[in-house]
Image (spheres, rainbow, N blue to C red):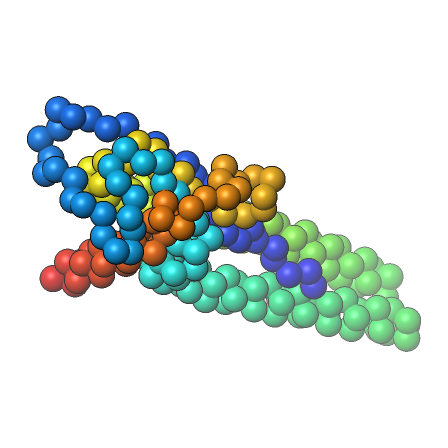
Length: 202
């Protein structure tokens, strides 16, 4: 039986732009730390691949999704194996002349119906899992986007770009390490996720 093929990773790289707003009532930007020396007004970037690999929320959701996918695949395999066995048993009886024509026709039609129902089940489960994966990726993307927006209230960068993937698709081919905010961003994302998990337990 063919395995379910599901898309993995982010469908496309995200670019986040935030213009400086001098009239905001937010606290003034802090001076750059040793980990990120980019100053306010800089154009900075982060590596989306590294963020996705190290973001606890993404890993947790992906783990749950993978467990569910494996369970569905196991059920698809079980149903497919039973259908193959029933078809083989039917063919064996036909070859040995153990069925009358009318009984053979009835059993053949039943197998045809079971095959159709099985195919419909596989398609339905593939669609359900693809939809669940898309919702999961939207949740992750939304969490990152919201955090980046709040992150830039403090840092006041002129532009924040997301990079990663192949050189043909990335908006940043070469960039100074001082403008790479990946680790700082990832640290903040995971800290925010931990707070969210603790709050949800109360």
